[in-house]
Image 1 (tube, rainbow, N blue to C red):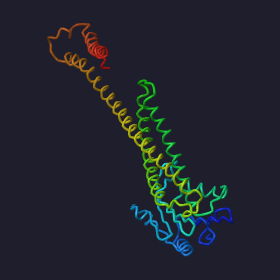
Image 2 (cartoon, rainbow, N blue to C red):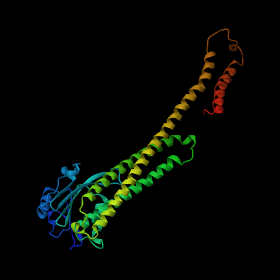
Image 3 (cartoon, helix red, strand yellow):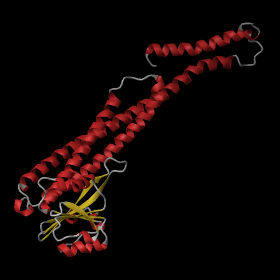
Image 4 (cartoon, rainbow, N blue to C red):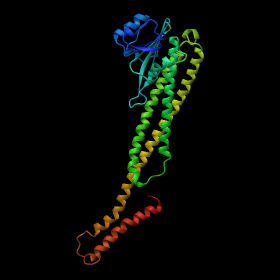
Length: 325
């Protein structure tokens, strides 16, 4: 699908090749067909990369300059609020003062920029201005994602370290809570990793772009690029901090699980020790010897029961006294 933004119209126009116009400032290609690619290539005299070419990871393939045509591909985080966050490759092509974007998914930042471009004041007047606006929108979105991850990690940290000790009746539910905590930590770790990939790709794009105002057709382009570069640097450092915190919380959660497992093994060991003396008493009086005085004694059976009870209670009392339980 082609979405073309024509400043004279004041709004993006969606359609097929018929949506193209010579005055289009921004042409957005979403999963383009061969006919749509041919139409854009004929209009601007550029080469629109295929989906396979966009997936290449070599920097030399992602950042290409051919005369006045700049082709830049970067991974952009999408579906960050869903259960399947992923990075999708987005190609930015600057040619003849216009911007062409090629994508096979819809990052929220791109969708919001398309939605609000008609209400912007002032509206972008060059392809370079649209490109800078898109990059700034993506950076803002990544900042929101990392902020949300940081807040969720703070909540996880509070649940792990700052909750009061719970009674025996809560131990089973705690196991389920720790499992949910592990899943939450893993989900945030995956999201942070993908956000870092996006930041790394955008830093390469910013470094590749010409910084002159006339080169991009944007007033104060150098200052805006420097600001975006500083934002990317600070977000990269914050993502490193978040990644370290995720690793710490993961180790802490695994430690809590190990403590619970040790407690269960300890409980079984204590129960086995407590039942050993009563078993010994029962074994003695289960022998079939005729010369056992207690066999003919009226209080022999109650005495055996009392001995078995004392054989279990006394070790338990001793273990509690020395602090083993």
